Image (cartoon, rainbow, N blue to C red; front, side, top):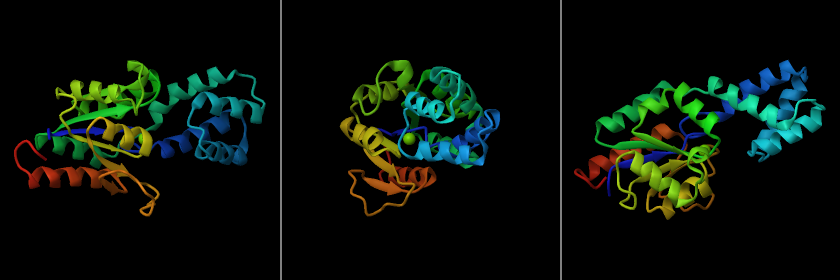
Length: 224
Ligand SMILES: [Mg+2]
């Protein structure tokens, strides 16, 4: 198996919830929504409204905002790249993987402006060999095609194995498996009892990086 490690971006390499909480504070202040407004935004986000167009339609309706949902969503995409951070130890971990002979890539679903903005603002774009953004390529995880693009961007052949690391069981783990990759599930909520098809489960991406090093050491040469 080739030394290829593909990482999801949101909630894997970066803490999107933390950035969202900052955004919610700013948005509530700007629109005078108060503390309850902040809580409502965070609840709405947690309650499975990851599709932002629908999210902003609900927000607009709830707070009787005059701006159209598409404008609110566009402003969100402009602002979010400035609020996300990648922890220094994660950037160091990726650099150490590459130094150990791994090719490292990022594969993410989302709009081009938001995801590319986040990749560049956090320094992740320069910290990896390649990346594939669904909004740029026109296909989304779990479509195997996006994994193939990511592998090629890293200078690796698609279909010759590697690893996929992510927090979403369908997009990352299901998609990764379909693309012939071994998988590490980032389970933030520690639902270790939950059934899953991943090869490994960790609670933080740092542990996933350590695991890859371990596999690389166990099988020196080209079969980590
Ligand atoms: Mg994710």
